[in-house]
Image (cartoon, rainbow, N blue to C red):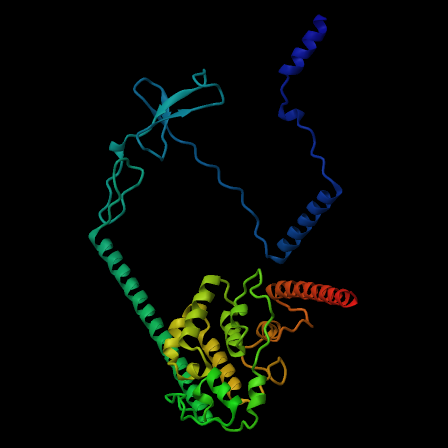
Length: 391
């Protein structure tokens, strides 16, 4: 028993010395890697592309400094007047721990004029010379002035671009008015002459721009091709913005152009309501100042494209004898898949296709369920009528 205790004690107190360090075991990959490195280094030396690495110079030992009591202390470059405790691995307050003094701040070298004072001196703020401070202030002033000039230049460029867009919109609107021979200041009264009742309905619904329109002989076809057949039982649970404009094809297409690529619902509702309050008919859209329109729909962004699309829809709506729109030969600028599918779904109640937009698909599914319910209800009514007839 004594032997076992002695053996376990000797195992616990045994320390591994460098002579007992086990050999390094390398894998085949590591050995091959070392050989490749050695071969590449030898090849670089032969080509003169690799210099022989010199061993690092040993760090000089600190010079001893004798004290009054005969003990030796070592100088240190970092003197901040503090005491530093040196530890050789023993516990705090142990035998190997001793304190040594560091140089005091009184021995520090004086700070040169115009140079930042050392941050190691305690309770002393950094100071700069007057010349350095003046140079910094001048640099800050020049930078700020350059930024202001750049901002002003950018604002001028944006203003010129906006004015050019507005001027192009005015020219397009004037061309449309000349093409339609419209008298925007004229009003409809009892003395106004119409070709027929269909012409009167067209002027009443879409404005006085159609009073002197040329190239339109069949006003019945003109009106019927622009008359919508929206889905019944509206609004739907989704309350889409197209549901509010589906009774008027021009408003429906314009709303799709204005709301495209806009995620904020409150912004879309506000801009659409303000725009249609300003331009309730295509004729009003031609007579409105583009600058006023820009202020109304500016929050939607992309004003040049949106305004050009609104004018293209207005021109097609007022000039074609029969209105047609699609994505091929009757394509209108700004009207893509979203606008065309909305026109079919909300304006014509077309259920023969699957919309690409997720909101339109949700509305189409709801509309399909409504159609099934209407069919079931119609069958039940027919069945009741038959039973009543038999009795």
